Image 1 (cartoon, one colour):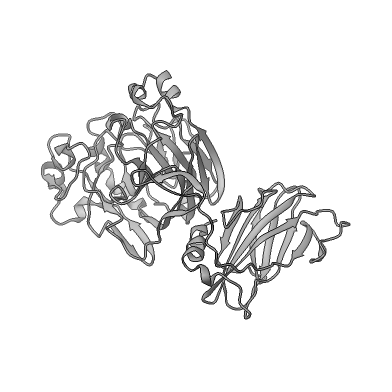
Image 2: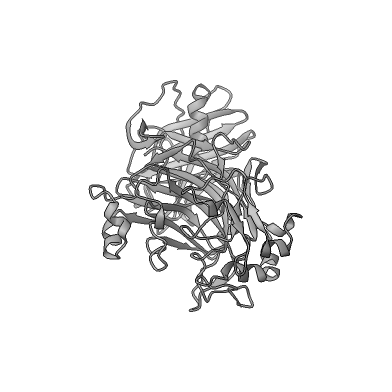
Length: 502
């Protein structure tokens, strides 16, 4: 599913090219069914094939080129010379149908085969469909089905969608309504934030600046890179402890001058890290939809990615995150990090979901978690959030790991959050019933994300600051010779951002 949006973009913009030609036809699709669950679909490699996309559903036909429940794009053939999609998550008993469509990019042209289905037959004695053949495999039964290529120049009909965008504009169900593949940094779409975050958020130990050192595009990827302030020759260690930082071009959401300038004195120092945060607030915001972001998350102690949806208008208020925030993907980027009780909370743990308060014990209460043996920040993943009128679903690489139902007002009221009094009683998703925009950035430190008493690295070194201490930022900075050595890959790298209407 990693590049499903690109398939639709190619087929939508270059629809006339997505046809069969006499020179090439999509090879036969071969199915192998596993026991107790799962299947493999493959085509043999043919010179000139550059991409194979497979989209399938169990007992549910496609109306058009929608995304499948079991789907992915394959970027290269395997060692045996086949383009292979494989899943062990699908429950496919005998007698069920797999409905599917495939897309192949061959040379510089695009081809798709639609309206296909495969009857699941795991019993070796069962006869295969007339158009195929059956052979026994260790994994189960293997069948090959001839793909019939459909040629069309008809634009799919526009079905109504609950999604709105940019102030209530309607759109079509399943439509790709936002995409950036970062061939360049389009500053008409992305605004670089310039400010010093306050404790109304995470009070992270950074200043967000517009420097091209901290956010840039190269090689088709967006890079967001945190750097030390003292690498700037104008900011020595002495000036960080005693000087002043003034941010030209600063925009404070609350017109608070302390977000635009800081004077160091006593326990207060200048933010020791410079980072970047980009958003689409001025160009694109939406209500309800499916977000997909392919990214490699940062790696290094006390860093975390900011892959967020934030409220376009703060309709229910700004203080204490009263208008909400949605985390598409969040990790604590330490390679090894455990709580005081020994619970692993490092880059092996992915979190996402809604936040509607900064109160310490409630901020993370509605987030959901997915844990892997491998670090999430070792490689690229596709992080997804499906925002519906009654729920929020979270995905990674096409696997849905959580669903959160919209009962936020009841939960907030029972925990004495005063902002709940302002939320819309008629909508179970409130405060997540307004338009939100996309934010991408990298945070460092702060007073909400890293629990006190946590220990990092193989030596289990203690976290160098306390979240409630007035000297938290100072103590963090004093420990820089330890944590900065771990910043081997501190950057957030984004391959693409896509948003689809529901």
